[in-house]
Amino acid sequence: MTTVFFIHGKESGPDGLKIQAMRRAVEALGFATEAPDFRFSPDPEARASHLLARLPEGEPVLLVGSSLGGYVAARTAELAQGTAADIRGLFLLCPAFDLPGYPLDRPPQPLRGKAVHLVHGRHDDVVPLATSLKAGADWQAVVTVVEDDHPLHASVDLICLLLAHFARELG
Image (tube, rainbow, N blue to C red; front, top):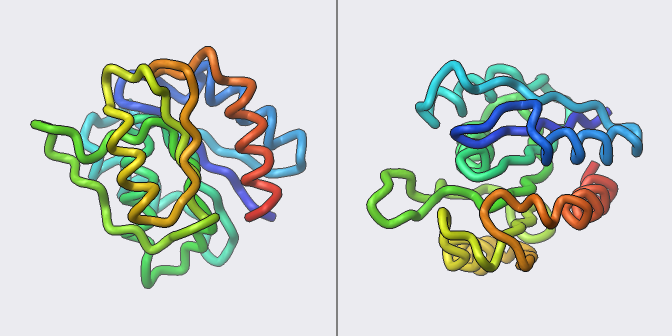
């Protein structure tokens, strides 16, 4: 069975509005879900190492990350190369990488094409839309641009539909 892991952002937690809605959407399709609490550390490298250690060996997983959680998901996919982790896809919401003046460069990505879907708000004033557009082009991934800001609260219903489709395709 595929497990969908939800990775929250820097200042949020595992019980946030988006994560809870997305969990319900994929659980309704029969997927197992986990939403680890990463508030133990602000360090994205520590978060990625913690997530990698939690992934089941040899079982398919999908990683869903929002903002800093998007970076952590992409970094975990990079770190998982050569391990027993079976990461099948990344669903990233306004992922926090390639930000001017911020030390998180976009991790090299082993996943490409339909295995990566990015959603980004056109009016995001925290993470520029251009970073997701560049990542999407480099990874040959789908990028969905929504009329929303960084938290994406106005787009939760659409995000849940997109994630359900993504999970059915890859899970």
